[in-house]
Structure formats: C-alpha cells, structure tokens
Image (cartoon, rainbow, N blue to C red; front, side, top):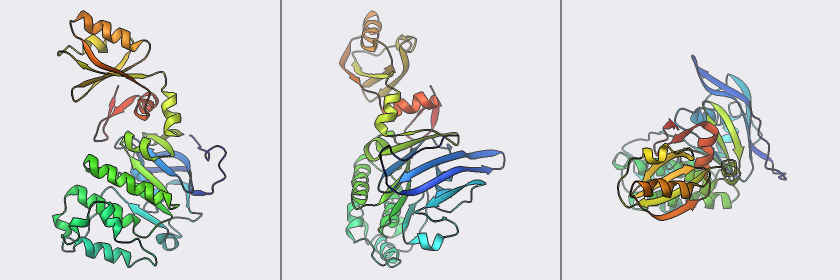
Length: 320
C-alpha cells in the first residue's frame, strides 16, 4: 500500500482525500488499498492502462460507487452522504454518457446551465469547438463531439472540483489541444481538476502531479518531471533509417529496451551509449541512421520502468 503526501512545502487544503480504498467485483479486485491526496487548485492526473481500476477509483471519489473498504472525502464532505451539497461544487465527465437524441446542443447546454446559480457563459461551447453545432441534434453528433459536450456539461457549473475521465478520447489532435487550453483556463480561475487518462502526453502537458495506477494499485505519485527522472536510466533515440531493416538488429542489443515506429521514424528506448551501438549495428547491415536525435526520459518511459509494460494509443497495455 502506498500513501501519498501533499506536495512538499505546500500548505494547500485537500480537495480529495482517499484512504485505503478497495473495490471488488466478485473475484476481481478493481481497486486495491489505494490512498492518495489531491491538493486544492492543482491538476492531478491518474494514468494507467484500460482495466487498471482508474474509472472505478474516480467513481468511488464522486460517490457513484461505494468502496468495500476505506474512506473518501471530497471538499471535506462524504461524496455519498453529502451528495446534494457536493452537486453544486463538483463537475463530472465519465467515459460514456447518453443524452436525449431529440434535443439540440444549445437546449442541452441551457438546461444544464439552469441547474446552477452562476453558470459558465456560452463561450464555453465555443472554446470546445461546438459553436457550429449549437442547432444540431445530439443524435447527429460524432463520438468526439459528444465527448466535448460531456466535458462542457461537467464544467458548466463553474465547479470547485472537476473530475474528467478520458476527456479527449476520440478527439483529433487539434480538438485535443483546444480542450487542453480550456482545462488550463479552468484551473487558472482556481478550480481543482482530477484527470483520468491513458495519454501520457496529456498528463505531461497538464498535470502538476500524476499517480500511476496498475492492476488496481497506485505504483507511484510525483510530478511528471519527477516520475520521468525515475526513468533517467532510459534514453530515447529517434532516427530515420535509409532502408528497411530487420528489427532484431536492434532488439537483440543488450542496451535496447524496445523499438517502435512513429511514421517514418524509428524510436529506440534503451540505456548506455545508445547512439554508438545503434549506429554501429545499422552500419554493419548497410543502413544509415538519418536525423538522429537523443531525447530525455518521458512520463511514458517512467510508466514502462515502473509497471513493466507499454501503453498503445487505445490505452491497451503490452508487456515490454
């Protein structure tokens, strides 16, 4: 069991406090003795593969599920007993949601605005790229547009705490970055955000601290930079090969941890004198490595080192 502490030197009150929470479904342990703290005003990320227990954990946080053991406090209140009091202070966007097909985007947004005394303005819809869809029926929206509308509805009440579960899944790169800008603006106004994601870049760009969750447990909690520092033994070498080659040339090297393809680039993660050993192995096969770039360790490198597996773009874990 790992208990996390507030950010060193910080005296901020807690927005979320989870103590020794476990949740089981039959023989499956979804959340296993998890403890963590989210400071007021920070963006806190929970990252991990599909099936790691992330969604079950946040459902316990917002009161949609009752832990089998442990306790949860949100803004100092019990999320189940004090649900009515928390309703006006907490916004939630879950992975999947369904709204009436026959309502228009503007009608849905206005209905949700009516639930709050000081709701967000209409520009929230614009900021999330839905302005041109105001008069469209919900049933006509794409999956990504429905996702952005769910995010808008979670933020419409100007919550003190927003819990967003895989908020950018299904969005194109530009829409994802537009959503990131909205999140940064919400935090700038003093809100706390709890983000669940399997996109490591998203966590690196947005989060003050990140909890890595694997198989229902919290493996580590730190800043993205701190977590990446734990993988400082790993290095990433990116290059464009002059010709196709057998990957075993590189995967068989003792310095190599994994080999990936990103478009025309090959990315080799490993340790030691990676540049020299990779260049020499390729040269022996008659292949030149063009545009070589040695990159520092990332949050994804830390995830691999701490959990032993790698995430693909869909959040599926594979053993390294």
